[in-house]
Image (cartoon, rainbow, N blue to C red):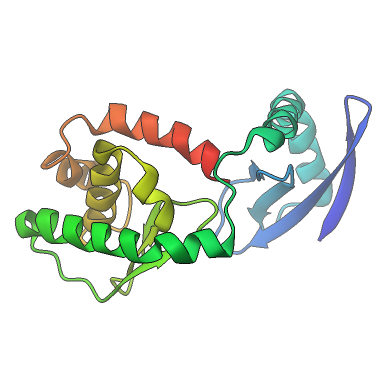
Length: 189
């Protein structure tokens, strides 16, 4: 549902996603500057607007960031670029999975290479692993982290202490690498 709110004298469009399973109200801003409020089904519009107003400084800061960043986006890619790097990414990912899974011995269903806008990798509850083709442009330590991260989701489909303990078996300095990757993630969009 599309709405508008006035923050710091600016009309800001936003959308509302009601989720039955959601327990908290959450705001996200995508790389195109789209504001979304994801909230439990029982919250009123007034409560949502009040929450958005309470986060006004954060919203303005992020909107300005994305506005300034849009012209410098180095990761925008065409479908042609994706297709030209897809095979190389697939070879790289399969080689890394083979190497790291030698240690973990996790079972997975399939591996796919995609042109994702917001993720380096993902793992489904069915054991499907998916990776962004842009991994081929990253330093080896970041690629290794993404591969191990998604492999460990095969055992722990969460970010619990047990999950991070699994990751640490092969990526001991994962907190620092994770920060580096988060910076690169901004450039992905």
